[in-house]
Image (cartoon, rainbow, N blue to C red; front, side, top):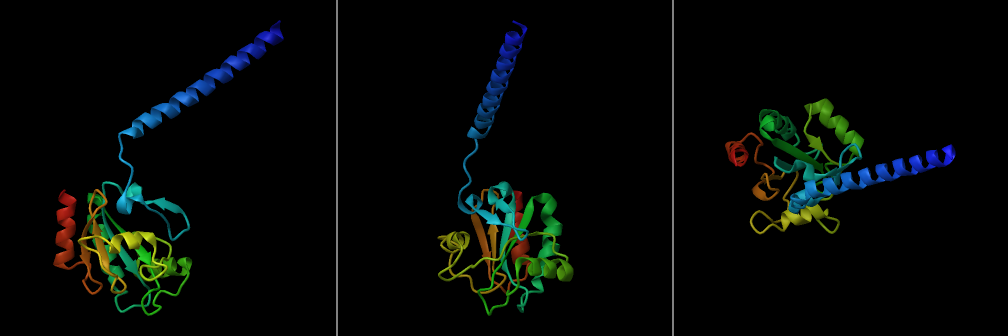
Length: 197
């Protein structure tokens, strides 16, 4: 009799735990039901330079600057100003996403680890870097296929360090050619305007 009571109590306890887990899942589903699924740029999941999968939806509500970067380019010193730009506006919700690419003059030949080491040791980069991708050609990454097909700011990536401004809703809000310096009035003004919205 006692053993049967203990078994029954154990079964009741297990059922209660299961019911609690189901209820928690239902409540979480309801909590997120009001959120729109991430689309556009924010709909992608990308591999970080450390090999982790990063859902770009985590940047929802932030202003982004997406840049295809390279370590052996005449524009490589822009890393310094990109980092300064990031440090200046990050507390206002600004993030830079650097995507190494070897599409132009084979100027990014290194591995992800070599790229990360170069960026941190040479330019003290702390903004987010991702695994090397292709930004043009037959093997163009779908993220860049989306960006370059934008009706307003699309067109082929011209060279390393082309910059795309993404607003808080994940929409492309500006494009700056590779030679445009990160701290130029044109870029700074566009970022400040996006941050006010």
